[in-house]
Image (cartoon, rainbow, N blue to C red):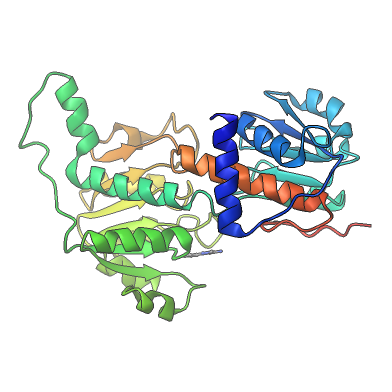
Length: 345
Ligand code: 9EZ
């Protein structure tokens, strides 16, 4: 991405979100990992004189501990473990941003104790995750990855890869937040009947878009395809397990492009081998990478290496989001998507 393209992205962002001015600052952000685009956006916004965005790729914990004391902010993607040791050494720090969803790699408790605001960018990945889910559903229904691998091996097997149409089938969406709802809209365009479950979303939200909301138990019995779009929390861990699979339709297809662990992988394996589940599309795993998983040996399982957020557009969105939140916090304001609320003296 060129500097001009970055500026254009920021201009679009300003038009969309109505941000209009930037104050003078004498702060510095430390950017780990590949956030060059983000560094340029921030540097542009603050002016090179006042705001220094230092890009430090691939620093070890020891190296970060050594330099972090001089920085007012730290911005990371998922590859940097922001440990209590690093935070302890970050004496000037006011803000830690995660350019993406989730803050698993940041010790937020340590940050809260140190008075540091932590935030992420939960919205920028929505359509990337949505489109990957729809792509995985169609790939699963028509055996596209398996057929592609077969033809590339020199085979021409047409009957082996008979699929199913999604038109007229029932899609069960478990977790009806931003991503679940976008998936539902696109599935409706495929003329699927969409049903949904979410303990935090009122039935009217579904009704307004022609989606019947029901209990998760009822959804499991009615869906031809089930896709999960929840966080991984105690109530969603192994939400799809031996017992819940037993209640599903024979030949059900399962999709997880959300969080590893929502589906019990051992139970899924057994159910596919038993012929209960027709296939599964997985972008996330209980252990990543899933080197030991027997699921990888099954023809009816299609997989991608956690690519849900991997679009140029999503990475740009989340980078801009944390750049603005960084600016807001260093200006004495709050972060739009803060995940903690430190008491700042
Ligand atoms: C959704 C959920 C749990 C759930 C939990 C939280 C936003 N959200 N959604 C479907 N925190 C169970 C099933």
